Image (cartoon, rainbow, N blue to C red; front, side, top):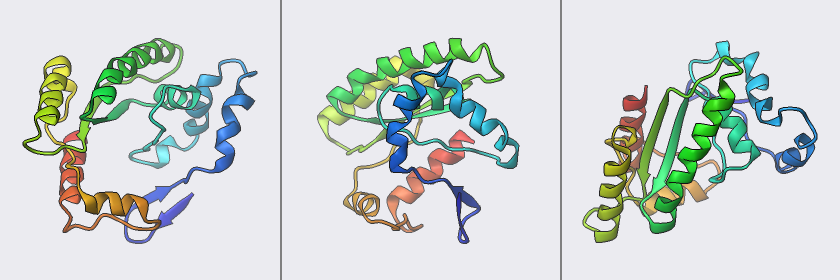
Length: 178
């Protein structure tokens, strides 16, 4: 676990050996509960634990969902991403059934529209459709598509700064969430 002196934040970065964990866990009883069990001993030490997963529905994602009480779905406003949203909800419903056996419950789901571009016909249409289909689960906030954000994400060690538009958008979303 690493900490940043500028923020009250601790980070446990991913490692390449996690790629093999699904294969290792496949022979275990109830492999989906491994992350929940691993976090039980430290959860009281933190106000929030954020688990970032790949955008798929594999064992690692299901395990992260089982350990969660809040789920944020970054939702690109594009055709294939919009079509996959119902699959995410199906997975979450399955996870809620699995959570009945442990002291966990997904209470909040928030869809965060990302890569939004104002006045783009398709983007506006996807945002409208998602808001109509998932009403209270869709955040009132969104993250704009911005070259500066892409540069931060692709530069090791780079951070969003307070002057960046995306910084304010993320901050507003976090305020809504907590």
